[in-house]
Amino acid sequence: MDKPVCLIDTESDGTLCVQRSALQILQQIQQPVVVVAVVGLYRTGKSYLMNRLAGKQAGFALGSTIESKTKGIWMWCVSHPTKIGTTLVLLDTEGLGDVDKGDSKHDTKIFSLAVLLSSTIVVNSRGTIDNRAIEELQYVTELTEYIKIKSPDEVVDDSEFKFLPNFIWAVRDFTLQLNINGQDATEDEYLEFALKLKLGNSSQVNNYNLPRECIQKYFPSRKCFTFPFPTKPDNVSHLETLDQADISKKFLEVTDRFSQFIFDQSQVKNLTDGCTVTGRVLGHLVKMYVDTFSGGAVLCLENAVIAMAMIENESAMKEGLEVYQSGMEKLKDSFPLELNEITSKHQCFRLMATQTFTKRSFRDNDGKYLTSLEEAISHQYDAYLWDNEKASEAKCESLMSVLSDPMTERINQGFYASIGGYTLFCQDLEDIVNQYNTLACKEVKIAEVLEKFLREKVAVTTAIQQADDKLTENERMICEERERAVLLEQEMIAQEERQRQLEEKMKTEQQNNEERARQIMLRKQEEMSRQQQETKRAMESKQREQAALLEKSFQEKADRMARERAELQRKNAEQEEIAARTYAQMIADQQQRNEQNMEVLRQQHIQQMQAIHYRPRPRSESSCSIQ
Image 1: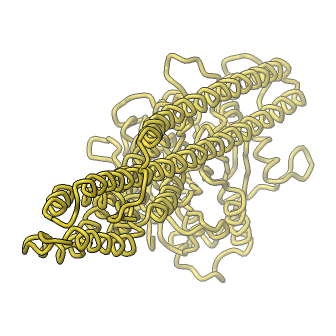
Image 2: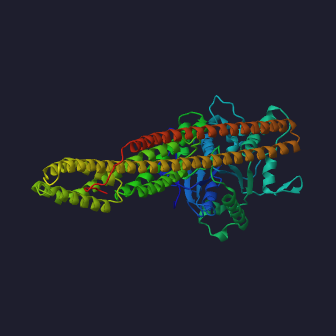
């Protein structure tokens, strides 16, 4: 994108709406996304920071009047400068606290959307982080009014909100000395000092502590940057057009540190269970979140993720099947082919299809959609095998027609209806069969078409034999017996070829089953790894908070934090146990389906083997033998 576009706008009645053109841009982004959103009071210079992150001097609108310039949420997608294969999505939100809005809840919705969509949220303010600045960030205390992790009926600990983004406070026009109690302090220490809780249980103390507690709970990863004045007051209104020489070196130095920190430390956007968010998935999230808020409902993240997973997995399944069909349709132009060649291509395209599915699929934890894709591919494969057989049959029949036309013409002319005609007919027939077997040796229907041809010639053979006065009655009986033996032999050859093809299909099915089980195991291992990482991050965060509370003599809150850690450990162990049971059941179900499919093939195998075994073998060679 060469410039930002409006992602979320506000209609005339105050309802939030998503811009379709912006969603279409996100739908085209297949890469993982790092999402950085900036929030803060209007006219505090948020857009300037976003432009610098985009590597541009201008882009997001900078206001130079008392009127808020940015409306809704604007988006700018650029290639990530340090993470290859990743897209950096910048979200510039409208200024909070604009008196012209009228709707007191509008700002909370904008703030909530910025929090939900981002992997790093930047709070931009001016002056200092004093009590007023923190109170102006009251929206953080209202998050739970709009967002629920699970269904409203389920009781969820506040610690469940640990999935929220990294938190950066950018303090603009900062003029104070970084000094706490006479000691030099870092920017981060300054932030933590500003978030320090007061002792006591009075309503005044509780009101003072509430926003600070929410920031500490919801945003365990916090960072602070203090920016000096960028330039002379007269130049601030057109900051984006100033030469570097006209901007404070200290301001540029902090801006560079801020940008580099964002590039290095802001992680790819993940959901509650650690699933990676791509641009396409982000588009789904934006649409569902905005629709929920616009409808006046409380957003249940679990339900939203489930709904999105269904959309993504159905699309992933369709996309995977299209990959398979595309490859096989091109192959179909070359039909007929040998069975091993079409099987090899089938395996190749099937693997490509499952890889395409895996790349796009989302939370297919029970392998339901992967199994559906495999079953659809299996049905398609059977259809392509049928098409290949029909093409082979048509080719073999055409070849047989060309080879047998001269003999058919002789029959119609009565050429063989004479003394010695039977011997000539047998010689011609044998020549036709030998040529056919040579030219059609690689065709899957070679045996069946030949069997059909010989059966069609039984009546003609008998008539020519009867018309040949050179043969004695005894010789005719011997010839008839030998012809039946030849026909039976050809039937057995055709049956054995069908058996070979069935065995090849069983082998392919077994390989597919093994690959499917391997794919499911890999997905489950990745899922477990993501969950363990998220749990580890949450546990470490709680441990740090508990230590900080103990250090500050908040024993009661530290004890509560210890209980939360124990509860988190219990829930994690319970989730791992459930996941293990689910995985075991999924594998068992998969094995049962595989065994049922294989049993069908085995029964077909047994029936064909019995058909071959119980057929009588020919007893002798024929003077009209066909090999």
